[in-house]
Length: 173
Image (cartoon, rainbow, N blue to C red; front, side):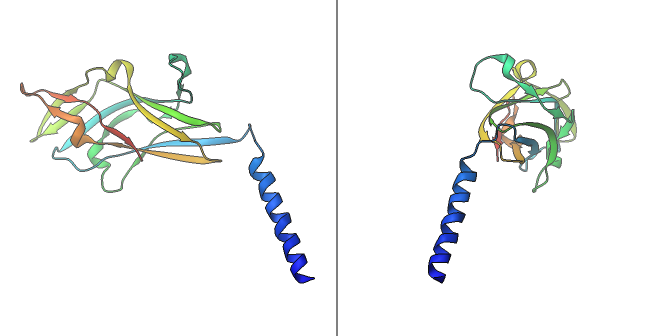
């Protein structure tokens, strides 16, 4: 009798779990946090002027599909974001979906301090169209955090003429 009761309870629990996992809730809201971090580099400062962070939920090529997150716009010294330190860059709440891409819109105040001298960082195209990152991450039920590693060591290039260019290497963690 105890064995039959146990099997019945196990069957009821499995059925309940199966029904719950199959139900679709289109009105579930997820919060997406985008955080920024960096790995060590030889410069004294690498300052990136981030004005906006946008998210895209489709693979559509349309530029109208981008949604702007609540961004903390400022100049970020990437070297202060090393050794496990990160900062909240942007946040937004959305119906459950899959994040396909992120886009960082940069301002004009990008600089690098090398051997004590502050140099401007030129960005070949990022200042106009922004820096895009492919993500393809499904948002969880309530909170999802994407940590973006902005690799300053690989992103800052010193040209032969002494100018510095920013060719961002960004990784989603």
